[in-house]
Length: 326
Image (cartoon, rainbow, N blue to C red; front, side, top):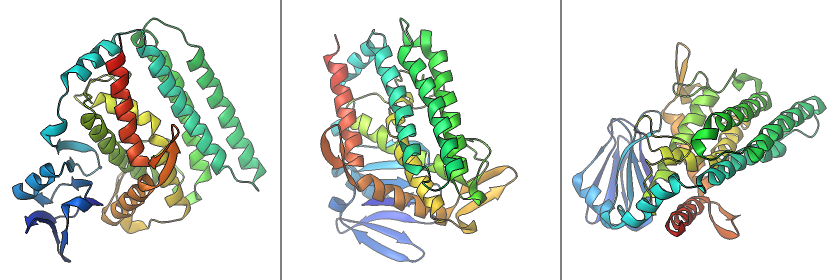
């Protein structure tokens, strides 16, 4: 279970060894053993006793902004900084093995996007199927350029890699827009702030995923701020921006399905001039849908685990890659 406090006045405290969630609708007591993460937005409160109970049970406490992006966290010192892993992480960053890792990461992202488009293309609409296939062909060309690119370091190839990655992403989202119900189609991918309902929901979904990946990296002993492809220009967890590329398509799928099923209404969004934000009801729908999807058991890298556990396992494997680097 994931505790999410995203309504003004909601609070979390400890009573008789249990977490107690208080909202205007009433109180709910929950055992610590049933909780995996706690997410707190602006306007909500958590007591120090509840924080200590979370630490005792190694429950991640995450503070997020109104857009769902992590702003801070509290975690147990039992999985704090591991100097050997982080020293090797630095060495890997400047090694010849770094560039192949980055290329593989971007190729996998494009492959995931292509695979999702293939599952979404309509069977009866030949015109739309043609549009999807043309986009896939273009994305495959960009992926091939990434595969064939040669250089001595990530910094040498970074501008080209980002260009091909961005071109593939633009084609991908152009098609996604055309596959959505007409009401929700959008002109282009817009980040924070979003210009439309779909991008507002997608941005918030990515924020949820950022938090889970950052937590997995920290627990594995990896420094989430020491990026490889995405540099730490804005004091953000740059390695999270690297690793998330492997898993973004999971959020894409959830958000696309919600819009295709017309799961949102006007109450789910707050709109201003040229800006759109996911609001209370919309957040609840998305958070529940994402958590349900990440809890599903899948086979990934030959292991049958939930998607959220697969993220933990990948972080552990990445830590071993760093440790074994010579």
